[in-house]
Image (cartoon, rainbow, N blue to C red; front, side, top):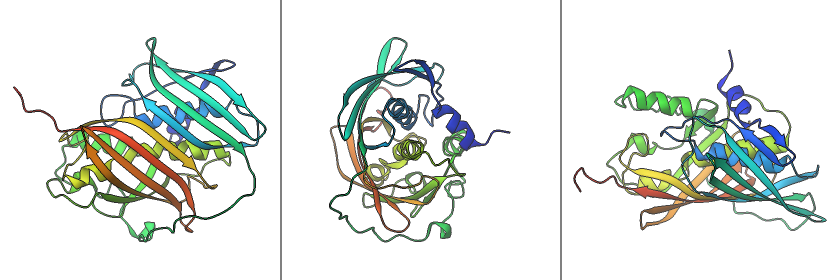
Length: 290
């Protein structure tokens, strides 16, 4: 029987149609559309497969343009913007039903020595001391909601440091959230694969801090309507997505039907591996007849 992680890896293993054209399958998320982290990870895979060997992804900037249809494949077209002495730039457009649904620009760099500093890793409990996300699911969640939450995250071991948004509905809290994560199984040593798995997970919880500030439970509970708008990541240092990573998240602002999340992702030994910023639509559903 295929494990959830194997199924996710198969999802990220794109079919090469032409030199710079790839096709990927898709599946639904907690809400009935393609999960944004899946599209971003697949687009980065497509970009990375056109990059000279030895150049690692160091940044990506993406826009979510239209909801993805989970019942249709996604075609990724890669534009080879630049191959320089040290840096390579790629642009990827994801298309479904003849329309672009996602746009990504990514940059890759050969390793080189340079200046080093970072913000200190914030305090957090040992991930092994925390319950799994499945164990934290409230017993009063509707069965279909609990099933969708569990299925969407089955390939990843998520450990919330504090109660997640759907466990504290109606109680506003400071707009900060911490989550430990790693894949539910070992990965190959390909650095691009680890970067893409971290990209996949990065879209799961980043806007939680927006919800916490307003006592909202989130997309699965249905007390907000939301979607990712744009997403940016900077990969500072090597890491493994199958080893514990601390996702330290906060929301500096929400306004105009949008919420902003920003975060650092740290290795368990304290190295800042990734910086992330995301803005998303976060709307309170209108009452019937409004």
